[in-house]
Length: 77
Image (cartoon, rainbow, N blue to C red; front, side, top):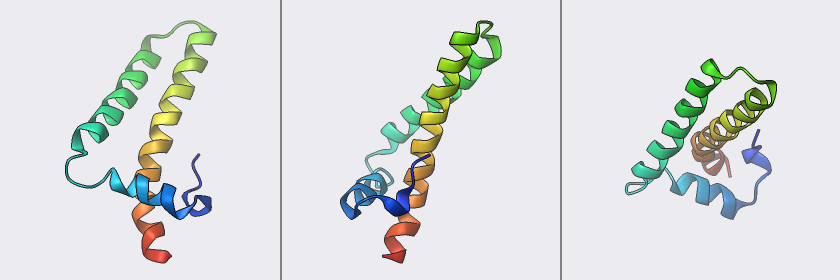
C-alpha cells in the first residue's frame, strides 16, 4: 500500500498529475495491466506464478488508489 499522506508534496503532486488531461492513456494502461493480471490469476496453477501475479495486481491496484487519494491529500495540505 502507498501511504499518500506520508509522501512528500512533490510526489503527491506527481500522482495527482496523472489525473490531468493528456494522461488518460497512462491510466488506461495501468487499469488494463491490473485487469490482465487478474485474468491470469484465474488460470494460474503454480504457486510461484500465483504469488507473482498477486504481487503484480496489488502493485497496480495500489498505484491506482494512490492516484485517486492524491487529490484528497492535496486539498488537505
